[in-house]
Length: 294
Image 1 (cartoon, rainbow, N blue to C red):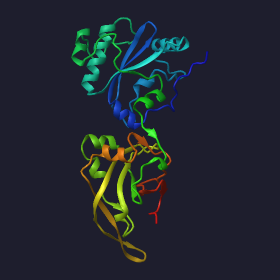
Image 2: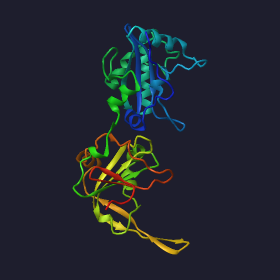
Image 3: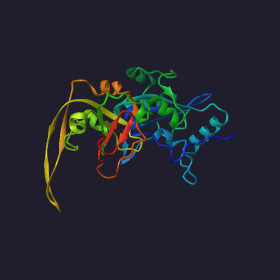
Image 4: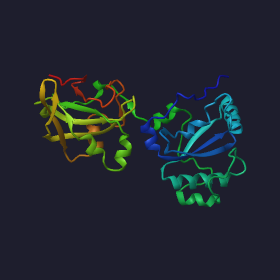
């Protein structure tokens, strides 16, 4: 029987990792759980996708042999399950839940250690959990996780367009989900963008996508006003004035605006931005333009 293991190219998107936050997961076979772990947050500049680690079999680097043997056997007989027990947690709560689950199921586990500290199983009640319950969701692969928490890829033609209006699409070079947490996302999305002179009144919406290749749609706002901020710069042909605009949004939330555009939990992978500080793209009547459409 062929067994599909994950490889190093299988990664969770920033959007999915953001929604997961700090999480606790369980690996089990037909006889019950055999491993509990904690993942989430960041590990240097690389996303911490600890939940996928055990299925990545790397030749010569098998430092968790007992757990991997269990996974291999469970996959071969079709009993393997990978369950997210709890997610969206603080670092502290994730560690507490992991330790409590390990302690409650010890010693019938392949975990080498009993967590960062040990607790009796009753400690789980504080988090609304109990040993052996079916809380959470099963996701045995990256595609399973993305289907549960991921963002659906869409074409520009799938959007609900505002009549003849133009949607300004900007790409952020920083993690929009972190900006949302600290309250600065809206300000960054509506900041000054260079628009051809006289064209800004046609822009009805601004949407922002994240830095990854999938162009995860992170925010959207309907525009009710704009403030021109001209900038002068020296060129070989003399002084030139560029038109920059800071946009003012209506009172609706980003989620409400994205829903009206058919962009709730969506990504736009067909869009191509230039490297560096990407210039905005313009979306109009189902098409994408690198220059302002006529």
